[in-house]
Image (cartoon, rainbow, N blue to C red; front, side, top):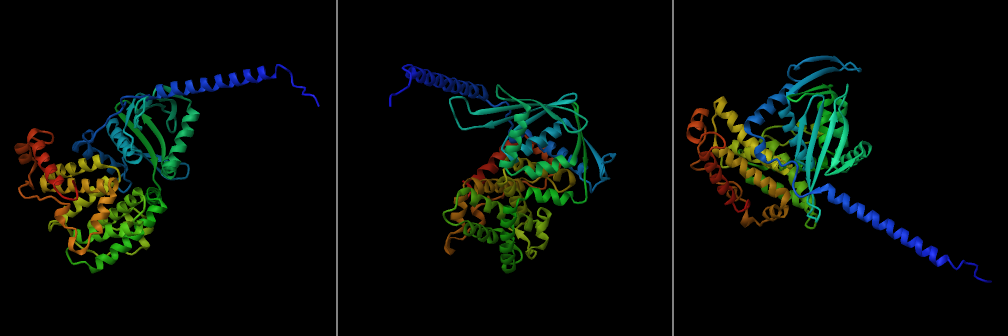
Length: 444
């Protein structure tokens, strides 16, 4: 049979391939242009730990207390369709900005800024990316518009690239699912009914039902974490039954870290070992504070509860609590918040009579460093936990000496001697504390 193909077929095929190549090249060029527009060399938002001062934390604490339904409602606002009481919280826009930034940093590792206007707000954030020729910062800017209910997204830019709202909403849902935050987002949408935006004030109308606290706690502790916490609380129950009274922190910390290493295995990924460390620190911190785990995990009401023990560090229960709470905050991603909380507590103490104590801050800073190592370099803690009996973990391995550090200073004395937070004498004392912390073998 004769070949019936037209003599022009090779030319047609060649033109088709040329057209396809041009199309692919155009797509590649467009993608490169989009990347160049999306990524920047500098972040739009850069917020350090110092952006949340002790005074800021004090105001935020009062704000959260006002929102707590166990206290008198800030203002009644009628009832929702299902009969639940509506509450209205009015807050300074700076405080809402601080809370939002802390939430995005802790949950998303994303510094953010909220700039409210009249009936609108601009949300900005900066995501650090791996180094590339296009830049290492993806700057995000979204414009929100007030409605009769929740604000709606009007505009989103990823760097210099505009993103249609429908695509932006899909990306947000995808990211929430990827990070395991869908349940928290749905609960928030169920609670908040209206947001009013003004340059100096944000007003939030929300519903609080009887089951809201349990739903909140359950949403913040996924099933995998619940299983880890349950395993660690069982181990702590066993250890506490054998522990002396009072119980030095090192006698509980080393076996708990060893238990974490055993659950994970020698060849487990670092992120899995870090997750075990977080669980161990949470269980230890609540135990030292005399608080039940059911405060954060409702299901823990049916779990074993360790017998009460006074946990001490350098012979003092307050040092143990400072250390462990700061370690948990740092391990959960709030290192900068842990720094600020230690200072905040001392400012409040100087006002309510117990006084400002630099040795408490030493315990805070040591705990913060320990918590950071627990998740950033978990193998180091595993090695310390699995030492033989001749190399038992000692308090001096992770807690600096506090001799010579002033404590119990009333506010007037603290101001007179150190000039307040941020003054030169205060910074010198903080530098000395940091030097002491970094001198500890396990914290270097």
